[in-house]
Image 1 (spheres, rainbow, N blue to C red):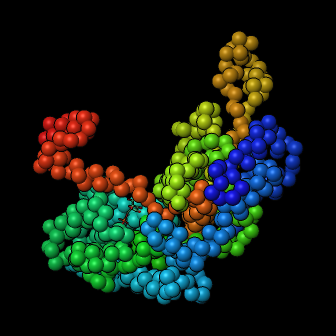
Image 2: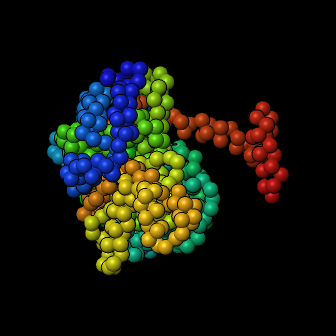
Image 3: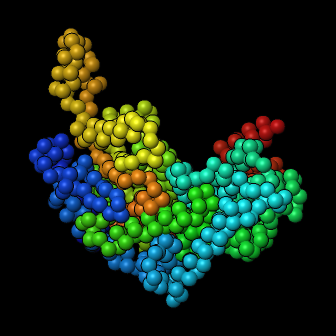
Length: 546
Ligand code: F6P
């Protein structure tokens, strides 16, 4: 079914859903010893086991047909060739160029961007090495021990998530901190333990106009100026932006401004100079390894047939559940404590990209688009929200992520972690039937009445889908590959849903209204004209602000 048809081809999936509704994964596994081999694939050193999904060969064939009909391959080529696929902002989408390891030119608007990309990387390397070695110091000559990144959204979530994930590669004497929220508590609580003489701020903002970031940057600047004098400011600040003029105006030294380009979306910018705090925290070589890992996933995505292509498979399974089964959320559950911010990062990547309700041509979509993405690391989640995943009324497709090797030698922790992640996907798939529950309770010696009362509560419906991503170890390369995997998944889904995954107009209205409300919140203008709720809340604030 071609893109642009009334239902975008999703109705054709319904007959498969009806057919699959008659069976369970438990039955399909019992009938087919080769199910794991049939429904698993590898790319860039990552194993994807997608056998615990409500699929068979016919479903997958229909999904690959859907991808082809939607033009996924053509669109992928257009993206690589620098076409302005972000049509509402008239921009190319070229974050893959930021991590490209080959030697071919990469053209955007007739210009090979690779020399610019590599030039900025060289500058980041030199600056990073100089700060880490102590060649660049604070104003009074002290070694920098703390780097505070000030940014929000894509200028915060990626570097913050990656820094946590790569903790084994960090140095105890150089710590990275992240301040994003305009809530003064955030910067206050970060700065209260820091010494201005040894603190370096990075102001990270693609536009260099974002209110939260500029407010935090001004507070940071005041903190340095009050402690060390105005003249110390240039030695304690660096900036990352596409708006070089605004950085210079803020007072950042020219040689400490690191640029990037409008063909890099904020939520796809971790590979650009936005990664500067990562390079400072883990060293430039490890940042480079992150880029290489992402490039390895790019090669896989660009060169592997759809049938073996990890991002494509994951995207299609997401479409299958969203559009044929009506499941509205998707859980990302890393069994990797260091990926504790991975789901938060993916929330922006996925929900800001595909949380859209008009097609590329501006018509309302007739089908559900981006799911609600959420998650927390296992095993913690098991003792919190997994109850609902196992026995709640909603079916929630899950991604489990797990490394084969931990970084630390602490037996038996990792074996237990692995046992848990395998147990969860097995439990979700198998469930527990009433007969099994009754047999178990009988074996425990419970009487008939007790068994009758308890059994319904102990039944697990099962047949609940999950993917498992297994990788050798959470190295910079693997992390780069994992992030790029999800980026491409989001791209493929955006093509199938026929939305622009690269704009984010939905964040604008709140920004506009906040700007208009500020003078009213500050008591300089009356709140008249607002709805009664807003006026009531405003009144409460003004009466209680103290
Ligand atoms: O408001 C949304 C957004 O534009 C995100 O897309 C972006 O990552 C974030 O704000 C931060 O923007 P900037 O890097 O320009 O400060």
